Image (cartoon, rainbow, N blue to C red; front, side):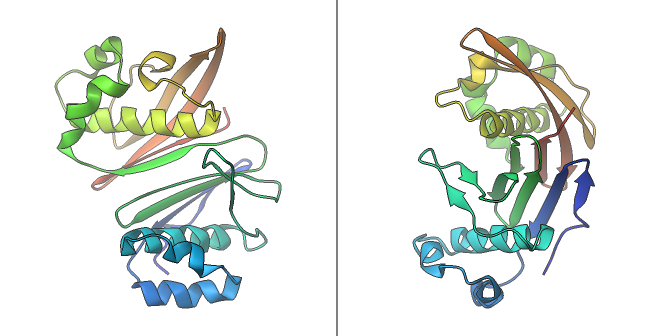
Length: 210
């Protein structure tokens, strides 16, 4: 079971990361312990998607064995019957999941690709793009994209506009750091704090309780 590192516990929050090295049959065998309806997993045509579906659930139970199954709202957002808020993300062989006892949360993990510059105009404002500079620009763009994805998952506002309604303050790019952001929607403004990490070819961003 290739947990990338010990789970990170911070106040009421716990973060887990998994690198999928198992084949599909190994994951299916491990899932039997939790009596999953694996037919849900088989609805995915891609084998990688099936593996990500299983790995996310196995990761969650390694974080807290007392949690039951993951349910989904009509919007597609996951939720738990237990007293936890949940958010999860996957990209290639990496799965990331966060649980929080007191606050709604958001998490996103992305495998780095230089192609992100092609869509920057869709999610970043002109001021955000100007603040990125030219050094490691694509890496910074990836952090920005992941941050907005994590915020969107936390806020659960249908139709929230990444470019106009989510603003991430300028940040000094390092291997890890803290991001400050604000969401402006329906004349209300919300301040959200996030942490980011560069994990080799992956970027991880998640919200946390300030």
